[in-house]
Length: 356
Image (cartoon, rainbow, N blue to C red):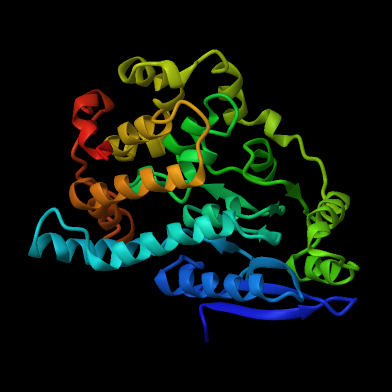
């Protein structure tokens, strides 16, 4: 069966919703190049079909929307490449990341609404799909995270932009601690727009089918009104550690701080967190530089270009293959990171990752 299921669902007034369902249950819908291309192709068809009013992106699994990218396959391919010739990105990674980033830009500039119901696990590339959508929904069991520090990578798929749009220092903390946000926290962090806890993906589709859709320029407003009626307010985030840190860090103007000063400022928020303690300190340094790289407004194209360059260099000389080996392949959970502490990661040593 296809890893991505696509069908046209008729509405009450004989227009159509293009439903796209991720369908790789053995990998919790972790994306590979094939899945990315199938989603992209479905979007092209939906955009060119005048009878399609919106796209509805969801999953066939209750427990997982998308667990990120299929990094195990990429790490194995890159390890083989490293043994053949150093300082070369493997073809599999070039294909995957270039296609994935193109999909992010395609979704961001899509002319029709994309409604994404991110129930269950939503990590890494899954969060990219959500944040590239126009209408982002979380449910009672949603868990959102960018856990790349644990595998020696950096948050990508536009994270340079959306992490910088979070309140205060919360984007930095979210990435550096692989924080798992629940639905309420996701709304607070601007990772989602609507909290709809009491209906599932099929029931929401039934509601969308009953809308009397009009001209395409009215679709966004129609969706806004419908989803707002179904959405519930949830203030649980007020009790969360991440909210507490964001409030405490309101006066930290991290974009204006020098690298060493910022790493010192962040220590109290990181030093007891397991994901940070056991994660790649090279990735930690890169994340700090990544999220302070731009001082003004960030376009999706700027974010993706920076991330593409960073990821390519990490694949060639970073901690990625070792991190994936330790966490996902051999599962010994004992990665041999290049740096043992953030103090060892000098700003000068990070400069080569950011060269144009």
